[in-house]
Image (cartoon, rainbow, N blue to C red; front, side, top):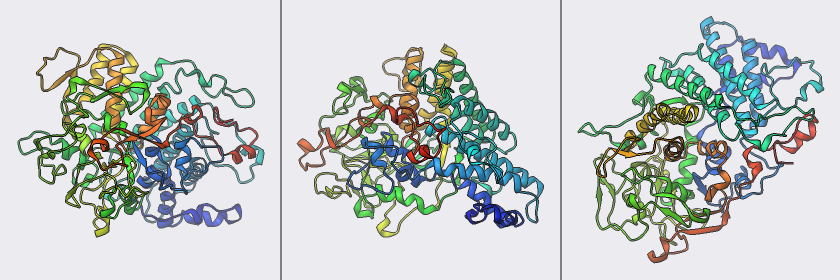
Length: 630
């Protein structure tokens, strides 16, 4: 891992201290500090939840509005009061140009010195090329077309007018970054052998960023969308191409397959825990992937993050842990996420909603799902996981609400529901009114769920029990598999491409312990396969369902909602928060789906792109505001 040494004091200098800047690159520690400054713009887990807000702005996790994290203003973006003056702690517009400039500056100034040889210099330059691309893409993914200057560093005598750049067309940015990322990937290793370099840029990180960018660029938001057909700079330059281009999907599919092939050749693979009989243990596999380091056998992480303090994860856990364990007990999950998980037989529990309301689910009758009554016995499965009742193999206790019974393993390792088990406190969660996990105040989940994914099972912050050394990532091999499954299905629309998509979805489902899909005939008692129709729409549907649950709480859902242009159609992304009745301690009313109307979300057409702060627009007459924000 890079040393956490800030170089801002060395690099953010005015021209009259240029000599001091040169001195940075005559010292090994200062040079590494300069490199770390460039890396430090990569998002960390804390930013995902309370600063950048990708998880809370999607329909993955829901904070209690009463918490009101005012420094971050995520509520403005969620509740529909977002304006061009709203502050945002992520602030890519303000921060990333600085990182990009330093990435280019580093490449200009770094040279071999005592302790840094020519090979290391070449490697560090390639790292900075990658990081500049990563930041450019994050700017474009967030704001759309942005002012784009690929060399990044101006002469100190540049005129003010030369700094006032207009936006660059979206496809121009993507096409440049596509070529640059592919070129840089050939200069970096797929993995590092030295532990201290774990987290430094690799060819796999380059190819992953490229593939995910091309997937976005092929998606409906920016491929064939006429919403932005007249969106242009002041000089008339069009900033989006409204014509649909099938070749973009083909390019995305090829890029996604390339990163998979290169990653697997380098030893990356899905993290899987096995039972003593040799079968997959899906509960420990889908839980422990978030807690097992590469050094302990987790080779799934294709884009690791190491540039944050290990205490950052405490924020996620502080919000998710019950009060009794020293947490705020206010980071819940949406009812629609609960609904998205499959049954243990691999079938969806809910197929949609009447009137676009999570109050009115369309239940898949053949799945065995029910919202009536309670279980009469303990459910046992083949696993060493003890997170169900505190006893290995026991998944749900008797008298568990049937909504939570017979669900797939990922449900139990992602959601804490009424009756779920807390290992640290050695008891069940109790979300009824004024019971153990419902204070009926800011420090309680408004819809009676808490997020479980990425929360260390034994965490008890009141007792000082924390897991400080854990992995974190921006992508893992499961992400790459599902990216490819989507892209290949859209690229060619034939049986061969659909079979390829199913192959990679099924790899995920095998690890998750649910039946695989096949387009072939399946008997009614087949325990291994589920039939799916051999057409593009059917495969698209299952890929999207799989992404919803496999990648939940990893900062990806928000991007999916946008690029698929579905945000306005998602019940809890554009309507009231739904869950159980947190005002009730009567089981006859507590388990009824209930709206929290004071926590109703609003999605507007403008929200598909972040606005540029109004003061930036005022400063630059050539800069147009993001679409529909005027």
